[in-house]
Image (tube, rainbow, N blue to C red; front, top):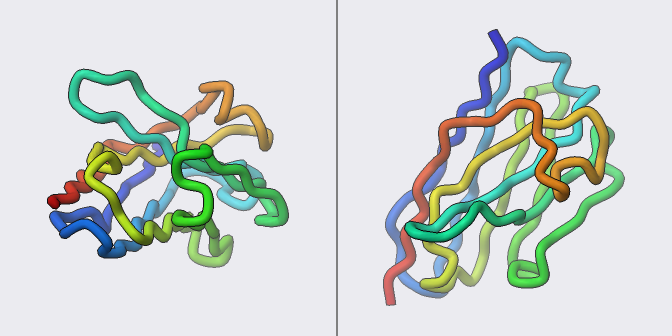
Length: 123
């Protein structure tokens, strides 16, 4: 029973920050690359960020580079996405995903997915 559960979303004003969390169970977390995607209403799912199993390597979409930071705590089986200087265009459901290798998530090859957490950014 692999489960990925996102939390930390909310309704904030532009310029605010949030920390999204993805807690996992049922998998050997430290062996998986982890990532975040987002999907706005009427739009396709978009890659946001990914991190290697060790946390050494990270990658970000250009739209969030410099504002978002992905990290992980393998002891807690948790991956984080610190989202700063939020913009209205960041409004979306944010999904956590797991893959066997770093780089796979960006190619939309996630093996496991969470249910998503809503981030809404007002003007």
